[in-house]
Length: 146
Ligand code: FES
Ligand code: FES
Image (cartoon, rainbow, N blue to C red; front, side):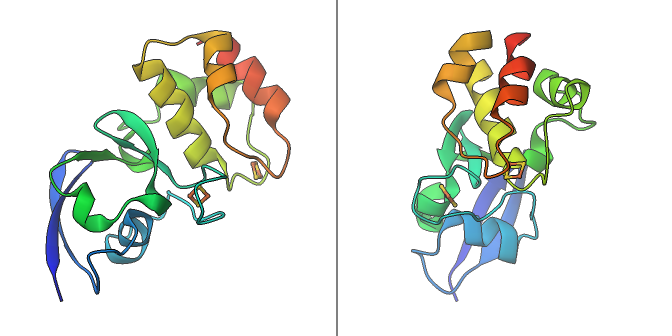
C-alpha cells in the first residue's frame, strides 16, 4: 500500500492508502480520522467537503491524495485551536447551523474567502456551498459582520 506524507493542520501525517487516486476527502475521514470534513455529493457541487489547500478553499472530494502531497492542508479541526476564528464566533452568535452537516464546509469556504481579504457581502456572494436545511439567511446575517 502506498504511504503519503500529508501536512494537515500544521502536522506531517502518514497516510497509507489503497490508491494514489483516492480522494483527499476519503483519506482525511477514513485514514486520518478527521471526520469534521463531510461527504455530500462527491461531484464538486455541494461544498460539504471543503478544506483549504495553502489557505484557499478547495473541494477535497475532487483532489487525489497524491496531488495533496507537499501542500498545506487545513481542515475544520485546524481552523482555530479553540473555536475563536471570527467566522466561528459569528456562527455561534447568530446560531447559524440547523442539522450542521454542511457547516464545516460552509465555515471553511467563508473563512477562506476572508483569507483572500473579502468581507461581508463579498463573502456571501462568493460562497456557493449548498445547505439542505436552508440556513442561507442566517449565514448572510453572520457574514455581514465579517
Ligand atoms: S462532497 Fe465534495 S463538493 Fe460535495
Ligand atoms: S445545516 Fe443542515 S444541511 Fe446545512
